[in-house]
Image (cartoon, rainbow, N blue to C red):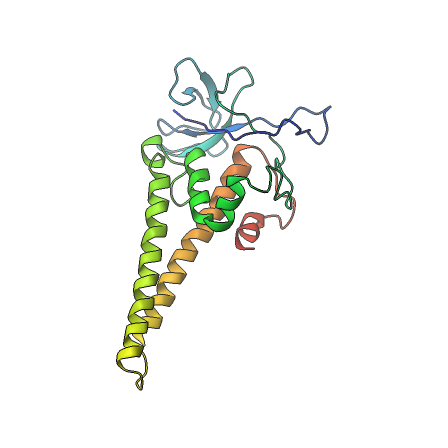
Length: 226
């Protein structure tokens, strides 16, 4: 069974070529058992028995519990909001497409990790940006928020400890352990953020059939880094 979330599409959106049929929206499906390549079975969208469609096992087969992408047929009514497929909704520099005072814009600028947590939850991704069952992904946003809070407290505590040590011993060097702990915390937190952002972008591209346009093979990593 698989649950799929979609994002809003701008009413002014126009496909690159109106004469071509856009690529299908993809859904993550969990294999019920070990199955060979080409085997077909019935899957339900969001666990709704009225939204059942046929899924074909991809090349190489799958093992029980594996997650793979399958196209959602056009005939299935997808609730909530639909998103374009085959290309990004906005261009790279469309910062103000939703307006200068858009909460999404300022949340992304001022609380980037929190905004990422919202996207991962809506996309049914885990806190590291990978697909997962609903029971796991429903808490993704809470996990991300606690990660950010914990990191902030950790950094603040080390900073206060460093200031207190300098004030108590103005003529001695600061303990070498404090910079080591600060560096370790920074590396771990930013490695998680970079990895989660990269995997989230990769999942969005896969779900909405968006091909890489530049830096083929590492576009997600480059965009997540810069």
